[in-house]
Amino acid sequence: MTVNVGTLDRLLRFALGLVLISLVFVGPQTVWGWIGLVPLLTAVVRFCPLYRLIGVRTCRTA
Image 1 (cartoon, rainbow, N blue to C red):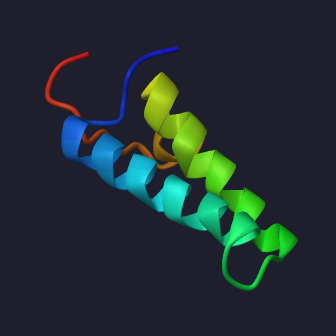
Image 2 (tube, rainbow, N blue to C red; image 1 turned 180 degrees about the vertical axis):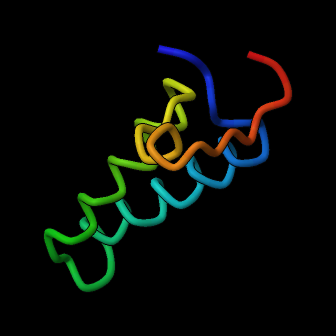
């Protein structure tokens, strides 16, 4: 598995994931907030399978 998520992309994914997960506990409290695990996980492992399929890399080196 190669790294294909850059630093800025990683920070944005991490923030988006936390916001979506927080919706489960505060806000509308729907299960849709658990979708936030996807961007959070891809930020932690620095790999996005969708980016690989479409040939996108947001990191400078890998």
